[in-house]
Length: 125
Image (cartoon, rainbow, N blue to C red; front, side, top):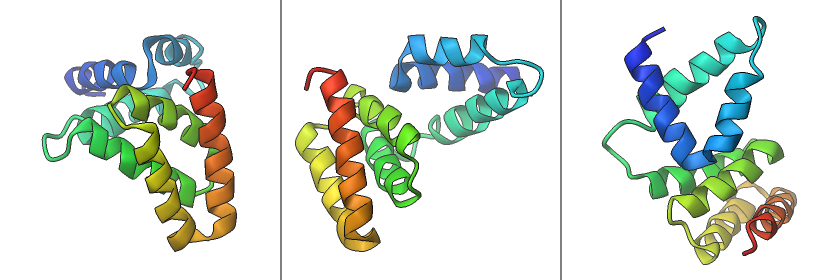
């Protein structure tokens, strides 16, 4: 594992997803899933999110669309909250999910709106 890239990824991951969530995920890692936590932090958050080509807001909106399309409600909920931290507005989240509904199907859009509504409610939005 590249420690420098892991540390960079950990910083970004905490900024986007919230320190409490990330620290709990890292602390709860065991011999079985620790390598997955390290891979995710290093490559997803360090190598990809740490690149200069897109800002965090744009990356968040892309993630909302992809996670919706892939039907990953747990990750979608987490990333809706991260998107808010990255400056994505409630209205922009709605527009991303409209786009998803048209290109991926109404059932996907309906589920994504439900998950996003729950995530926003948890944030008091």
